[in-house]
Structures are given as structure tokens and as C-alpha cells.
Length: 387
Image (cartoon, rainbow, N blue to C red; front, side):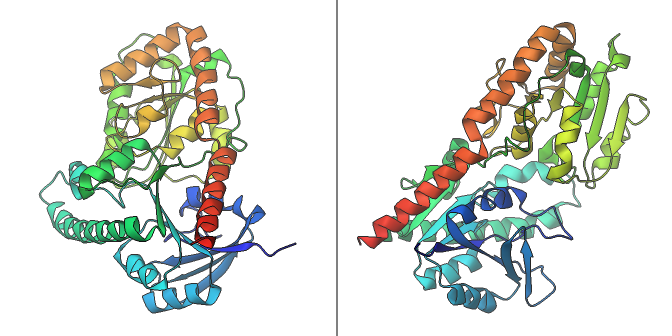
């Protein structure tokens, strides 16, 4: 049996036993890769305190460093046939450009779009001091990415991968260039972990919010307004709301609804293994947004059979068929009305629930997206054999 091809996967925040909230969606796919390849995760992150941190996570070897010289040397030591990058930046571009190794670059959102798309997060005088350095760093990174992708068109050694059609189009708009040699592969949803169990009609009364409260683009203010609007309805006391999340906006926003006995607050992040049990006890996933390239937590909830209520922005409409597998609304008034409609029509709720799960199963089941990635990797390596 011939040895497996070696891949180096570059990602800055890989999960570790003491910190499970890293790039979980990267780890989800990599768990499937060892069936096909020899995997080495190499992380470059200036915020890491140790000069070198090596560990094994679920049988995947991880090496991370804040030193770009050590980062480069580690990749050389491994001698990969292919490099896969998640969350590229100018330092990573400098290193991989010198190595002359075929590369796949996954773009997820903030890494390849302009700071202007996140302007809503800097809504106070005090926040401007954070906006200016962020804007300069963002422009520097986008210039480096544009130069890198232009060269990639000519040498055919780099394959850009976008997690949604919207993100590809947004990146082309923000970089002011066509990225014709790219492909769209959605972040996979583990439909085994987030398996569908037919919902009881009563679960339409249990509404779940799982969202970071660290930025305005997560639109938690719209969820809170939706709850306040529903509080005026005669059936409000029959509803139950569970809010999970963390961030500087959590207290400020949830204080508006914390006095309601049917609103339960959980001011912390939860890891993926704990989420399916929470999904099982709820029927509606309230997840408005102001900016999302895909929405992984949204897909996980849909896979579990929760009916999503989200916003028609970014990549979200690629995953929710409005009125078929969930609802896409702009305003809290509209979202409250959708919850009311499902309260009054349990049959419609059950139809939407089954359709939501089926949509994710067809659109981005992990086993399918991993297969797409494996086929792409193999095709890139085969092409290079004949160059």
C-alpha cells in the first residue's frame, strides 16, 4: 500500500483540549481527511504566548507559533505535497509564495472582504479608535491577497475556494478583480452529530438563540426586539426563549428581556458536542444577521430540524428557501409575525422543520463537502504530476 500524500493545513485557531472554541468548522472536515491523507496542522498566530506549542487533538498533530521563521521551517520539515490555508494573511502569503508548493485557499468571510462591510460594528465615538487600525490592516491584507491571486492565475498552483456564491461575488467586488479559477464548497455540517429527530408540535413554542454577542453584525438586538414584540401577544406566556452567547453586548441587550420568566439566559459559549441536546429541546432557531457568508450554526440548527428565522443577507439565502425551509425577514415585526404564524399553525411548523433538515442534508452534509474537497485535492495533485 503506497504512503498517503502529506497535507499541511494552515489555520490560526485550531481547537485544543483546554480551548474548544477554535476553528471548529476546520476541525470538523479534518477529522475525515486522515482516511485519505496524512494531515499536519501548522498554525501561525502572533497572539500565541509560547514560541512553539505542539499537541495532538483527536489524533491530528498540531504545531503553532507566533514566529514566521519557525512557521516556514515547520512546513519545510514536513515537506507536504499540498498546503491548505484557512484565514490567509500577508505573512502566510509571503511564506507560501517562497515555498513553491501547490496550495488551496479557503476563504470564509472577514479574511477577504473590505472593512466597509463591518462599519456597523463601529457605531460610537469610542469605537473609532479601533476602526482605524482595523481598516489599515484590512486594506494591507486585501492588497496582499489580490497580488497573490493575480500570480496564481498565471502559475496555476493556487486554487481559491469560497464557502458561498455570495462570498465569491463579494470578494471579487472588494478586490476589484475576477477570480475565475475558483470554486464554491460550503462549510460542511455534521449531519450525523446534528441529526434530525422529528419534532413534537409543542416545540414550536420553544425558541432558541445561540449567537456571539461580540459585534453588532450578529444582530442580537433584532432578536431582543422580536421577543419584546411577542410579549404583547396573548399567547406570549406559552412561549419559552433560551438565549446562549457571550460578548460585551450580552448584558446590555438581554437586560431588556431578563425580567420575563419565560426567557432563560446562558451567558457563555457552548461547544459543538453539547449543542445537539439543546437543539432537541427547541423548535425555532431565531438567528437574524447583518453580515454572514454562510452561517454554520444556522446550518447545524436546521440539520437538527429547527425552523430558522434569519435575514435575507449575505450567503444565507443560499441555504434557506424562504417559506419552504425557514423564513428570511428583515425586521423584528416580520420575525415576530412568523413565530406567531407557526404558533397558530403547528402543521406548517412541522413541514418547515422537516424541510429545513432535508435542505442542509442535500446542500452541505459534511460527508458530501469533504468528498468534494478530497476530489479537488486529488485533481490538483494529478494535474501537477503532468506539468
